[in-house]
Image 1: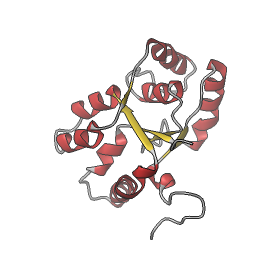
Image 2 (image 1 turned 90 degrees about the vertical axis):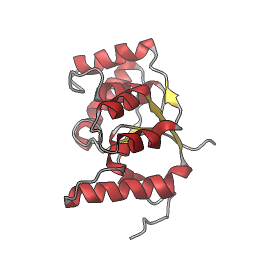
Image 3 (image 1 turned 60 degrees about the vertical axis):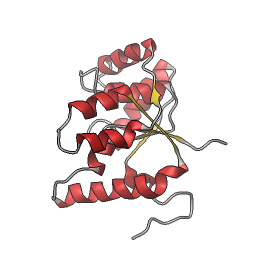
Image 4 (image 1 turned 60 degrees about the horizontal axis):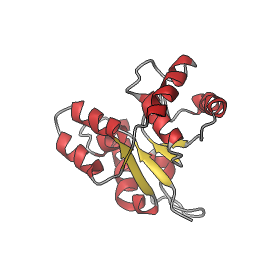
Length: 165
């Protein structure tokens, strides 16, 4: 059985290289680095041109390092059907009306049947209160529904392993 496929969304390389010092940002950066450095080998990773575009448009500080983190990852193709999925997500008020944003990441992972969408976007993506709506809309569209998680949720590896303190 192949390793689970994880879609790396824009916030992952962003938090890996984040330099802000507030405790919540430091915690997310540390969890992201722990997962990336020690756990990512357990998975097949992929990203998309949408992530690359967002990283290129982002804050200039550490931009090259953020892009380097995803440079070797295969990029999921943005097939024509994905635009229709994005439109359906927006029409069903699943995601904000920015078709190049969160709806595109979810559509890519659903269309390409990624096991996980890895993100720190807990407002629109990794949000337990939205997951039922995501599942209903994807079921209505005949799509696979990825598990949407943060790096913290993927720390610890396989069943029975505890994350390091």
